[in-house]
Amino acid sequence: MKKIKIILMLILVSITLTGCIESKNTINNRQYDSIENINDFESLLVAVVEKIDQAVIGVSNYSQGTFGLLSLQGVGSGVVYKAIAHFEDGTTKPVEETMDANNVIEYEYYAVTNRHVIEDADAVYAYLGNQDVEVKATLLAADDKVDLAVIKFVHYIYIQPLEFAGSEETKSGDFAIAIGSPSGYDFFGSVTFGVVSHPRRYLADDIDGDGTSEWDAEYVQHDVTINPGNSGGPLINIYGEIIGINTMKFVDSTIDNMGFSIPSPVVTKLIPILEAGEVPNRAVLGVNSIQIGGLNGMSPIQRMDNKIPDEITIGLFISEVVPNSVANRGGLMKDDIILKFNNIEMVYSYQIRAELGKIIVGSDTSIPVEIYRDGEIITISLRF
Image (tube, rainbow, N blue to C red; front, top):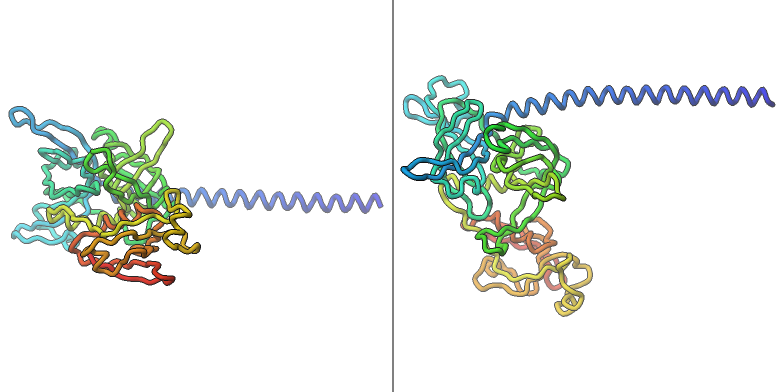
């Protein structure tokens, strides 16, 4: 019996050791594969930065002082998103059609930045850090609600414009890169790296500085390190596409790396209007509504008084419809409950304000609205 026990123990030890060796080899192989993948990823990031480097510019805000002399008030960042080539014969073409041309005399560049970067400027200059030169720029327009502005400038050296990411929604955990001048031009071209913390945050904004928030805007929250000089610079995905325009960060001794960017779908809708020198006229729905759920939602008594069924846990209850408003003309009625607006569930009141902020009056935009009415869920369309 003892011999049998000893043999059995030896077999077990042998199996255990073999398993450990195989397990260790597997771990080592995984570590080796991970190192190879990290190297590949590092090379990818370097390539992305090289691709976007020249398109990110500095933006200088100058005021005019005594004797007409310009005084630098502040600097931020911007990104070139469009270029037009000017030829010797006086013709122009989009830069994408001129890659092999050798008779281009200059390029006309369009760049987006933050409104607060150029606010109250008597003169705006684009700083091209790779050449260490400033070029006079023209402010085309600035949005009075979303923190965006479009400038243009002319230069003889080619800069590859960056593209905006498509309509596919940015996701939490996506890698992101910021590049800009975090503390002035001494640190031009600084690159930081992180992840998207949340693809959609709604923050209230006091537009006119009276201490009351008049506006709710949508942002991409990220942990990519940004500082004041990054304002107006791009937030980039690992494909080298713009997913947002950096605009602000939370600063507090108890908070670290909470940055916010204006999402690329919002930016691309506004750019044509700003390019044309116009300030967008935002849509108004024309209803008074009460949030049903959430911390600031209806009380049980309010739900009972308005005959809201138990199965409706989110939405905006319409208490009034303004005559001859978009809502009125589109068929919204008192006591309707808006469940979805533009395919987004309406949990909080600020969500509908933020969605309305993306719609330009006169753009003939059609928005689907899912509502609960008299025991049924129906969808109507509102046209702005």
